[in-house]
Image (tube, rainbow, N blue to C red; front, side):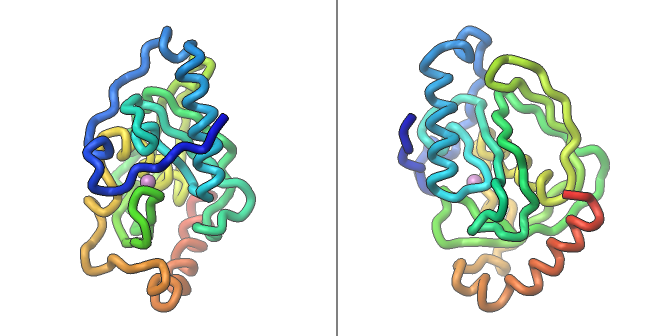
Length: 191
Ligand code: NI
């Protein structure tokens, strides 16, 4: 396993739609190694998730994981490691929630954007087993962020421009308000 370099905004690879992974590819040592590297890279960077195109591989593979308290996003509830291959995401209803996000590919910028409060996610795990799950609240936001990456979409595309801020100014001016809001979302949705 190795930590890979994370591409940053402006790299055209981040704007490409990643392609579906075939069953043969998923079984291959190369793709299994890519998944191991993505997990290690995400953990080394303290991310809540990572998509394959963020490490330069335009395949529909994304991971989400929040272990204990994440230093970048301390208000996020834990997410057990989830490796998603060919994920398909759809809203469960029309309810939206405003979330403040950041991204490992967009250094020193955060912003508010709308996410669906509840989504259905269907995907294959790294062993090719099908999953069909409902995600809610902040966790649903994390899954939407990662699947967006696979379609070449970054959170800044959806963010309200005047809410964008550096991490320092988020801490100074927005964190207290947003953490209170985040606690409400978690209380309401359970995650
Ligand atoms: Ni991201």
